[in-house]
Image (cartoon, rainbow over all chains, first blue to last red; front, side, top):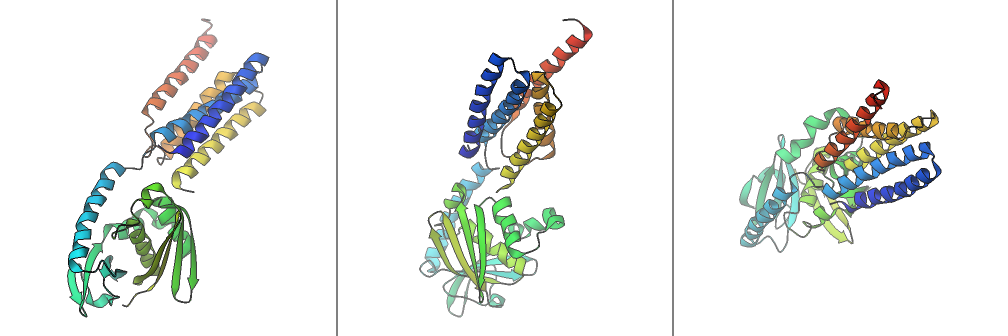
Length: 231
Length: 83
């Protein structure tokens, strides 16, 4: 259920019902017709709001939670949960999401578990999520990074209602405004899909490795600070 | 504004334009407004699939189809001089 649409639909139905009664009593058929059209709009909005569901959410949500349990135990066993660094490396047409104790150069890491420079890491490959946008949206690719991120994170994935992007020297500051309730549920998980989607989207659009420097949950907003990673 | 918000905004605008046009043309038959609104709903939701993949509209479709058929049937009966 999406309460915004239910509220909008209910309002339209109530207002149109008042006007239908008024038009019927006065015999004004034009107002009656316009009110009926408004009533139909209200019914449509109410139906959409009351039956609204994110596509296949029911399957994906518990599956992500199960995967999180598995990844949590991996993090605990490898000892990197205390000091977690997240980096997105680009390898060919794929991305590799690296969780490690400290920042690692991308050339030395691979998918799976490993140790580089005495630091344990977990590398999760991302092929499909990373490539997802290309085929469908190649024809309407927006011009700059902020527009592209807005298209990916706001319009396509519905992670938040809006976003702000700022560049300060080599730090990219991405502020996701008004996270949706579904996205908020996963913020505290190490395998936070909101963070992963944002990092992947930035890395893909800049075509360079990206390292997460800082993350902050400020009310219903989520702030990510990142910079170019080591090649 | 997400994809569904935009789709609903476009649908509302289409419905507003259609209804306003009918009113400006001096249309006095209320069932014409209803029929046109239902027609806009079916045409738009057929073209823009983002509404249907997020909401279950089968019951609404059936109801609107029934109402639309009744309106058309009523108009045919009037024209045929049965009523």
